[in-house]
Image (cartoon, rainbow, N blue to C red):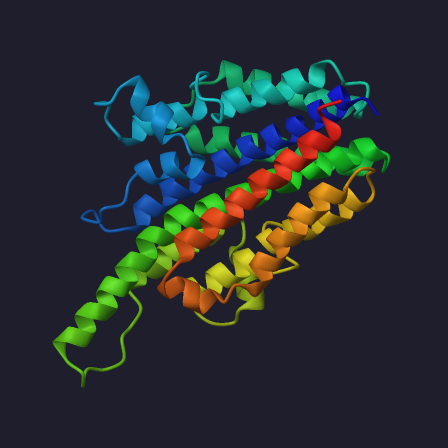
Length: 322
């Protein structure tokens, strides 16, 4: 298989997954802000940090407002922002355009029509939900067409490599930014309770913290499956453990890494990539989540993200540099 073809397919699926994940984030954040009290200091800036675009966002205008309209436009329509929905779909389409004979024709048609839809629609606030729903649904249809109609050749392995590596990266980004705010609030609350009285009743979880942890799950379409696996109220340590270490939920990091392992073992020249992946899996399996929620979570997720970057580099060196 030509390295150029493998690279295009890999990046095509990464960009489709990125567009879907960004649409999910905007949708969930919109609903979350409706549930929180007006004086809650929680807005749209966290989405910029989740995407990792804070430098680009502020370099364009250091004094720009970080309000809903500005951030949503940046995440949906800004072609200069490579992770915006329109830029991601354009990149997915371009990567597939020259190699579209490799994938089912229906998948190319779906990517092309989804890009045209996003290009021709600048959603108002009222029409935003329908726009984002169409993007999410379109991305899922692309994944379904590829899964249902592609032969299980090396080409399909590169589809899955891009898909699961991008998904694992987004899950860690969401956990890093969302949990930083939630866990710091929880520690402050616990400290205040301890200083007020040692004879006080056991601390009750802040109901708004529970709402925000639920939003973390919903950002990843994980709420229903979490409730099936964890039959108790939503809380930080259980959410983190589920999204980091559950081996059965498709958006959990552990599940994504297992799928990457399966794909790499079917490809030649996989030794360096498998070594990088094994180190990442060992780090994830050795983590004790309750301890991380007290201290060190940000550093741990940084290490996981660095490991994902190293894994991508090994994949690129083995298959795309020839």
